[in-house]
Image (cartoon, rainbow, N blue to C red):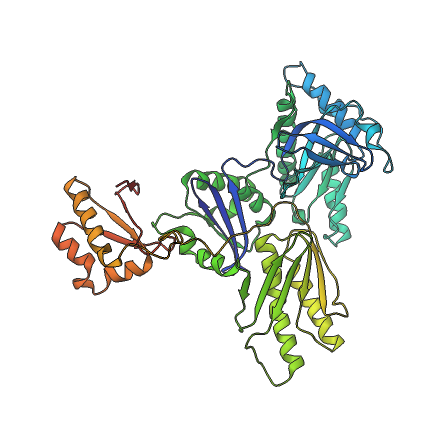
Amino acid sequence: MNKELIINATAQGVDIALLEDKKLVELHSEKTDARFAVGDLYLGKVKKLIPGLNAAFVDVGYEKDAFLHYTDLSPYAKSLLKFTQLAINDKTPGGFDFSQFHNEAEIIKTGKISEVLNGKPNILVQILKEPIAAKGPRLSCEISLPGRFVVLTPFNDIVAVSRKIHSSEERKRLQRIVESIKKKNFGVIVRTAAEGKNTAELHEDLTELFATWDTIQKNLKGAVAPTKILSEQTKTTSILRDLLNEDFNRVVINDKAIYADTKNYIQRIAPEKTEIVALHQNGTPIFDQFGITKQVKAAFGKTVNLNSGAYLIIEHTEALHVIDVNSGYKSVSNNQEQNALETNLEAAEEIARQLRLRDIGGIIVVDFIDMKLPDNKKKLLEAMEVAMRPDRAKHAVLPISKFGLMQITRQRMKPEMNINTQELCPSCQGTGKISSTLILEDDIEKNLAYLITHKHSNLTLMVNPIVYGYLTKGWLWSKAAKWKRKFKQNITIKPDNNYHLTEFHFYDGNGEEIKM
């Protein structure tokens, strides 16, 4: 499988598309002023204890107080509280030595939150779930710092190895290595990606995470709640951290600064993969170049069409998400059971993609086409489980019920990606009328004459693809050729799928838009 990461930087933020074999499977959006992302660390102030829920509301700077349940406190909550106060009031120039920190006794699993957070103290918390709808962020006190091969967990000395590493010899080897290089008061979870890695690679990863913890200590010194203490890595680097492997064959970026940062990051974590990073500079919108814009428009509607003619209907409610599978005009054979199986298998693959792409979380109910044979139902379940395997979010798939429904749960950590593909017409603003297309050519030519008169050169004209086809048709007899002869200057014309029919803009030789 070939994986590609396409990164589109705009003034509003960064859009990141993950392609698997040219097919869009994940779409992430990172705003310029992104806050309260999963993994961010905040110094919060406990505002209210709710004994009935065994939970607390914590002020982390969001408009609504964040939610912290007792089960998310971590066994080492008392140690964390003690550390937070020590770090805030620390007067030593280089910060105190965390390896000399004395941990407090662990809290009991069945305890009360008032026993731990009595007095409404300041506390270091990590964003577990981003704000969704009317809810504030959900918090955790189980601080974890993910690296490429290991995850650092302070306030304990436990070394755990991923259960996905099946070889007992390899598990023992990794455990021995980590135990020999880790510092006191730090626990380590060895990730699946560590399989086969040597001591130097694991040591480098751990060293970076220790440095991150030192940064947290430094940022806590003198801090006043609520305030952000540490940001999770950018979406780009976190995706690369979790997914970068031999299948990754290209990372394409349209911004020089992000390109340089990404290249430096890959140089640090996987020098052999540095050459996969490329800068997009040919002038075509990067998402258009890789067919992502078209895939987004096709994938985010209420109806999702499949190649065979079958289609999905995706509906969202407050409580759950419902997906209906319809056969359309698909007909493989005269055997109804076989037709249903073929359609369902195709739909299962697309449903798994849609869950990742839209980042749908919570309860999902799928109404597949009815099948009678138990073997076919089993085949469908197995196919759905296989299709869901690449999904990094925690999920569970249940067998088909007697009503023909499949239930899926998927971890929800941030708001669902929702793109409205039915937009208000930018040309008419919903009136149903636009300026006459008959005078569009004259308007362009008039503006062109004005710019050339005012000494502009190396001009690029961006237009809708339909207008582009009209202006360039006929080569020597095209409108573009006519303008070249008339103005004694070469004018580059390029299409942009995001432009409406009568929209056009001029750009200078440096790629900067010329405001008219």
